[in-house]
Image (tube, rainbow over all chains, first blue to last red; front, side):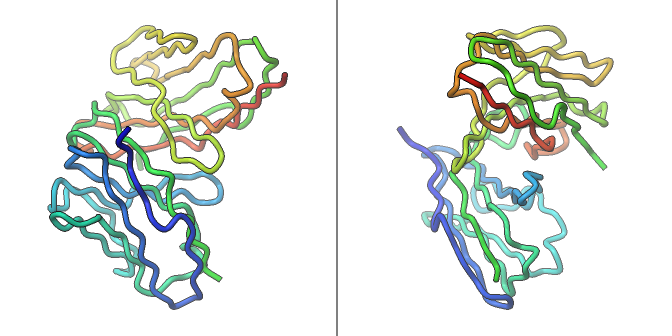
Length: 115
Length: 112
């Protein structure tokens, strides 16, 4: 069965280092979401794409966060200069459309630890 | 700020019993409600969606929505040990372009 693939599963970085994680959405799903789940299980929406275009994004935390979904390549989320507060589970989800009535299929996440 | 509040924070139910989880939203623009389940080490997986007032049943799971009170609930009958997980209520509005607002979760433990 097709599913959302996220790599790496675990990522350990020092403060100030770059952290990059990737996501391959379900086959045929043009919409991709990124969420951050912190240690208290609180979810924060980061950004979503339809094909290569950004649909909506938060104010990407002082511009340290960037994301892209290039054609024919995995989507990626990058933190330019990691901080301890960025330690969290980063979840990628994909969907058939950007509409709110469509299910989002989540990957297993990339667990980032910033030392 | 859009918010979704869940209760209880944690719940322990004997195997075969009924588990009831609750969720209240703060935004009347929320029209789409989802229940997601997350087992340890995995991403969330959608259990059910409910968009209209009333009950929706899928197997052992029943969701109930009351838009007037902005309240949604999930009832699990004949609970199994495999139902032990984190359960999240999530809501979305038409203008959100699919963005989900999650509650803080309920940790459900099923005791054999």
